[in-house]
Structure formats: structure tokens, C-alpha cells
Length: 90
Image 1 (cartoon, rainbow, N blue to C red):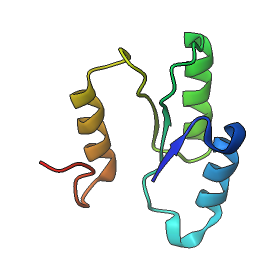
Image 2 (image 1 turned 45 degrees about the vertical axis):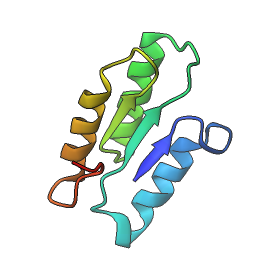
Image 3 (image 1 turned 180 degrees about the vertical axis):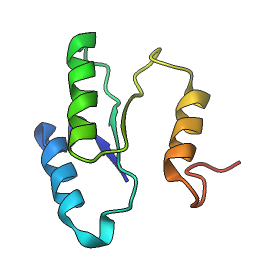
């Protein structure tokens, strides 16, 4: 599952907590992402990353332009998916 940082007026943490409370989704990888080009200080991004992990998320990934190479993002998401089907076509 992928949840954007700005989901529903920045309620990403609420959705993450809700998903983790559902028994059917306890083993589903949840990756939270920053996709919009808002300038957020690195210290805030690190705090968001820590909060995502504390709430049971798999990771927090910065998908903004120039953050990392697109292929690195896809490879990370494929690894986060684990044994299941890749998250992108080969």
C-alpha cells in the first residue's frame, strides 16, 4: 500500500494507523511517500520517516523531482513488496 504525505489534508498518519489496526492488513507493506514539490526541511523529513516506522509503516520515500533516481525508487518499492508481484512492470 502506498500513502501520500498529503493524503486527505495531510492525514497520512491517521490512515497508516487505521490500516495497521486491521487484522487483514497487518502483513501488508505500507510505504508512505512525499510526492509533491513542497520544500520541507530535511529534519522534518527525518522526523516523518521515524514516525512512519513507529506507526508500523515499511518506509517513507521522497519521490519529489531530484530526490533520487526514479529507478532507485522502483527498486525500493519492489523490495518492499517482498515475495509478491513487483510493483512495476519489468
